[in-house]
Length: 280
Image (cartoon, rainbow, N blue to C red; front, side, top):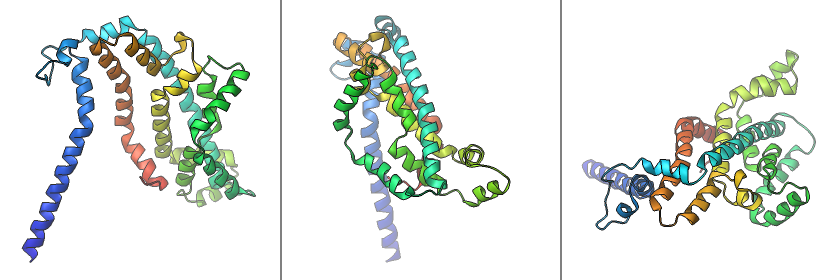
């Protein structure tokens, strides 16, 4: 009986690992297709039978991509937006979450509930009034609509950081008060140094959201000199519909920074999610 159960458990584990391997291959196959196509000629990409790897690595595809479209300019614009939004998101959300987590004031739970309720509003219903508002302010065709909102907090990030701050013992604050510290000193010298994993999580989400954002730049940016990578790639695809090798090279260039950031920040990212109490 014991031997039967061992075999049954072993069979279950083998089946589970086999299923995970199959799912992993299915998820990685599109990235593999992008990678091999970026180094192929257009004829090789659609050759029959399919070629699993290029006969010769065509590094010239990446050179042609930068020559045929101002990708360097799109990179600079996107990096600028990412940097500004990272500063705004980390500062504003950590400061707001600190108030909800560590400062006792009248109606604290009510106002925090109001913040959470904003997460239930579909973002699509806000596009038209936001667009009209920014246009009336004269901010159309500028970076203000893409950067300024990050300095006023995000409901999910506030919730994430608040949950993380609640895990930090309140005795640290009490000891700091006895030494003459105020709330801002506690926030700057105690809370922020202890919340690096949660801040990295906010940073990764902000980076990926800004880097991948296509709709908002499309909505607010009409000047090609202000375009981001996503807008440039879409325009590139429309202009070079037959040069698939250049399209794949541009897509790979756009994807690599996200993979690099997540690779180096994944440990802190996972730690920040787990310690905040948010479960997937």
